[in-house]
Amino acid sequence: MAKFTILFKEKPIQSAIFDTGVIHIGSDNTNDLIIDSLAVAPAHAVVNLNDSQALIKQLNDNFPIIVNNAPFKECTLNNSDEIVIGKHRIIYNTTESVVAPVQPETATNDNLDTVNEEIETEQNTLEAHLQVMEGKHIGRVIPLKKSMSRIGHSGKGVAVIARRKDGFYISCLENNDSLTVNNNLLQEQTIKLSDNDQVVIDKTPMQFFQD
Image 1: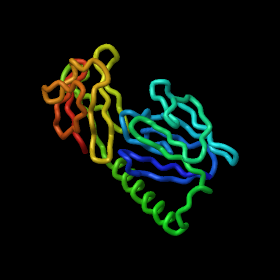
Image 2: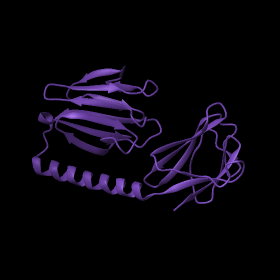
Image 3: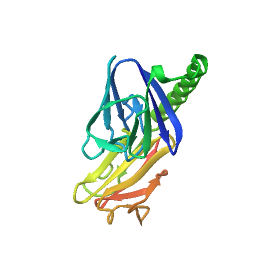
């Protein structure tokens, strides 16, 4: 058994205990440990956990993992190891090393589970779309159902829209001189979208709206 505690800016935001099996880490909602960040790949890493060891593996060459300040593609974890993924830290502990009393620890995990369930429920209820306003695909509606939706074409402009618990955020991945929101260049910014915002990607005007 092992405990994983995720921290952001030195504050714990999620904690989970696992017995054995494969633990998936990433930004997509299907992961066991979900890190909602553009610096984290939808499928970032996996930990193969059994009775004798915990082996972490990198899944995407463009999204590294750092264990105890050193980059690894594959690494065996030891008690109290620190894993850095994007801007988040994950502390790995074997359950034998957890010294907190059983009742407070159980209550804390229950509270965290409740918060995580509420966040996941809220995320699942958010529905948003982009509608093409001009061109041969005018009227086409693009649903934004994934935790991260990639819009555009490589070489002509690519944006990513991240679905977070408080809304949808757009940022530029490629060719930031052609992507605009309400006629303003997005460039290096990340902007929360509002109903009826006008987004232009690859010279295609679209309107953002939520259900």
